[in-house]
Image (cartoon, rainbow, N blue to C red; front, side, top):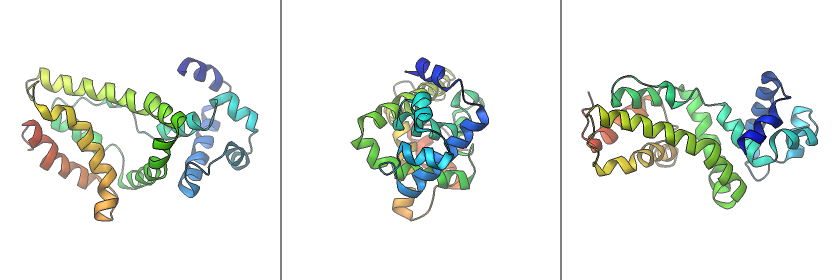
Length: 199
């Protein structure tokens, strides 16, 4: 799918692509995934619906690529020399405002991901799996450095812990996730579970 998508998108300038992605994300926040239509995106961006389908194939890929465009760089760019440093770098790569916006987007997509096979597949292929592979490399470095025992059972749940903290912050505390909250959570929960010093 990615090679085809790259060929499709080659005709749109990066500036135009960013403008389209911004409009898609605005629509998502306003009406949620189910109510976003290619017609609405076309109207909002003064594009033809045919152009949108030609470039992205459908709504699911367009939405997920729009979300991916907001990420401030991949995890592959992070290598501080310690697991604590790497996890803190992940937590602070977005400012609090961007985190609040992303949390709102995730809430807008949460139900749709479970109910829509196309969206779930695009989400896994374009967002989850690439980040998971980079995250596994980060963990392998920590194991190779001797920071974490390779048979520590908490290793299998690290992503669940981190995503869970981000996703449930608003639900439990009625507050958006913040850099301070995530870094303190890493020190209080994730690192102790792995047997890594938190200071």
